[in-house]
Amino acid sequence: VESDMAPATLEAGIEAAMDKTFGLKIAAMVRTPEQWAALIAANPFARQAEAHPARALAMVMKDGIRPGALEACRALAEGGEAVEAAHLEGGDVLYFWFPKGHGESGIFKKATPRMLGMGTGRNWNTVLKLAEMAKGPGVGIVVRASNLPPDRPFSDQSAAAILKVHAGTGKPVAVMGN
Image (tube, rainbow, N blue to C red):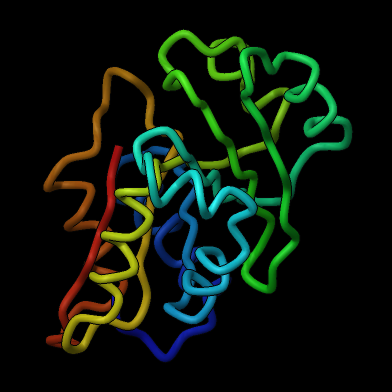
């Protein structure tokens, strides 16, 4: 979404639009292209992510990483799995490396929002695609809405509610949904 609003203000507008339009309490996370570039640059598993991008994951946190989350994830790690945290201008990020993929990972199976905090994770392929989208003509901020109930998947209606935040601007939009 291209906007002159601060990311926190835009998040609040998107969350209010989702609540008003659908009656859903949705956590929206907004990062500027510069913040997204910093997230990419801070990846402690950059070498592994370059070789196997589907096995590296960045989890963007809504309100920070819960105390003890990093240690709890490390205790669950097995077979070369690793997790690191970064405290960046746009917010905290957890970085995961799953050498055998995340499907059978103890971390992936047990690390819940209750343990970690509210966040959204994307593999490195998607992280890089979002960075490219943010470079597109007229795109200034990439938005990700999360925490949708399973019976109400992200849809064109949800995207429409996000668009209403900037109705009438005529500016392009990049939305990443569940």
